[in-house]
Image 1 (cartoon, one colour):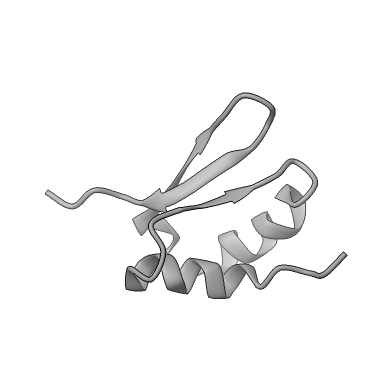
Image 2 (spheres, one colour; image 1 turned 120 degrees about the vertical axis):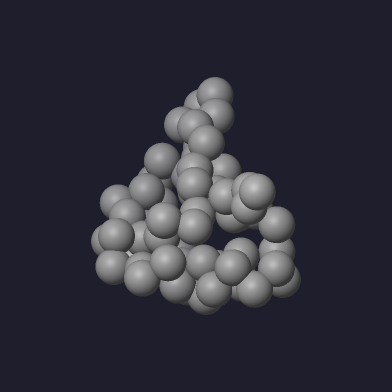
Length: 62
């Protein structure tokens, strides 16, 4: 299995290059380490879906 570059996905999300990405239950623990160290994590939120997948997207700005 190729290891995902989670920090790059987070950066791409913040930059508007992507509008969301999904993390599977198998990826969750590896992703969480990167997510908790990410300095802009408060701008990103995840929504749990059926089957244990989590969709991360940029928080709405008002």
